[in-house]
Amino acid sequence: MCIEDFGRYDASNGRQLLKRVYEVALPNTIRLVEFFRSRRLPIIHLQWYWHQNQYPSLMPIDDEVIVPKWRTGGFNSSGLDAVLKEKGISSVFFAGSDTSFCVESTVRGAVDCDYSALVVEDACFSAYQQLHDSTMTTLGFHLAFFTITAQVTDHYPWDRLPGVPHPILDTPVADR
Image 1: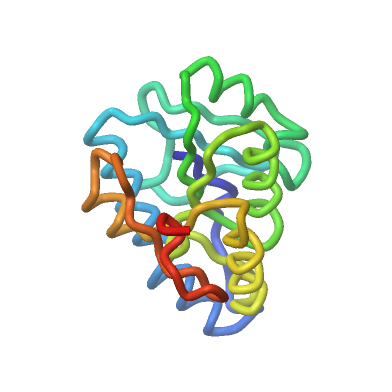
Image 2 (image 1 turned 45 degrees about the horizontal axis):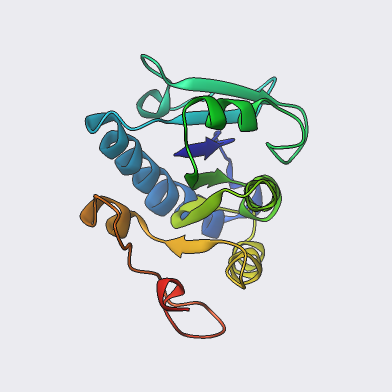
């Protein structure tokens, strides 16, 4: 699992953002981290070189890797690809922010490097919900797979992870 740029957010973009962060994305990301940790599955913290995670539940522990980056995408400006290859990872679950900038750029990089990218929709957010929704629509159109936290945690091991309906095609991603 790759957690990207999860930081604190204020009310400058309104209550909708705060609600998405603190009532949806943060609790789901914490749930994912706890799930991955309990199964000793790899967690990679991808973050701006100057950024530090501010949530105790998301702080890296033990052998979790922090990969600093210098651009919005993690593949063109960090050692993310090398870390994934070293760990033998070919499929990556993505969570974090900003869906429409950093997460999208990193997911596109993952696909370009032949990784299977699974975006955990309810563990991501953007400054504006419209940007998040637009990005999910774009990424879901033959680039990445959608899933939600409950599907990740309830369907392990992931022999066939059920897909979330695609926002345009209205069919589960796994069935396309």
